[in-house]
Image (cartoon, rainbow, N blue to C red; front, side, top):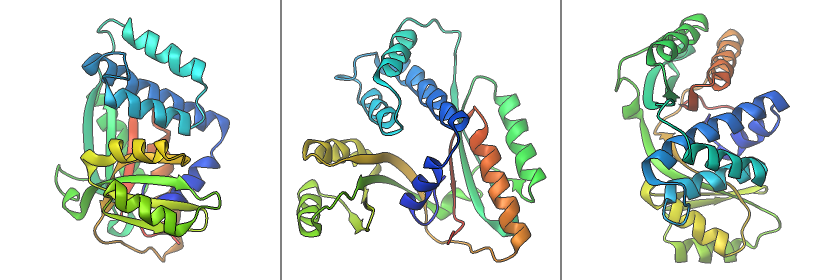
Length: 241
C-alpha cells in the first residue's frame, strides 16, 4: 500500500509474517507469468520482466525461485489467463482507495473486493470515482547506508529525476512513470542498494483519520485487500502518522 511515506510502508511490509511474505512471492510470480506471455522469457529483451526480477530480489525471493518461475511461465499453456482490473472506492471517512488486481476470475475478485469495502465501513465505487485524486509516478527507494547527500543529489541530477527526498534510512526518488525502469538501472549501475522501484498512484491530497474506530477499520480493510491473492497493489490517500 502507499500513503504519505513510501519508506514507512515498506518498513510496515517488512514486519509481515512468513506466510504473508509467501503471498508476495506468489503475486510477483503471477506478474511474471503475464509479462513473459506478453514479451518473452529473456529479461535482456523484456524490460518488464527485468523490473520484476529486481522487484523479486528486493523482496528476498531466492534466485532459484525466480528461475523456476520464469521456466514455468515460459513453458506454460494458456490455462492461466490473467487480466488486469482496477477497482476504486472509499474507506472509512471517505479515504480514497485504488485496488489493482490480476485475476483469472473477475466475478470472484469483484465480489471479494466489494465484501471488504462493505465489511470495514467503506464502499466500492465506479471507475474514475477516486483516480482523479492520484497521479502516477515512478518511485525509486534507495537504502541510505551512510550515503553522501551531495553525491546523491548529483546522481539524481545526472539521472534527470523529478524530485528526491533524502531521509535518514532511505532516499525516495520521484520520476515519470515511463522513466522508472531506466532510473532504477542507472542507480543500480552506480552501486546503490535498491529497496523498491515501482510505478505508484501518488495522492494529490491526503485524508487524516482521528476516530479510533475509523483507524481500526481502515487498517483491517488494507490488510484484507493485501492478503487477497488476486490483489497486486493497494493505493490510498490516508495520511498515516
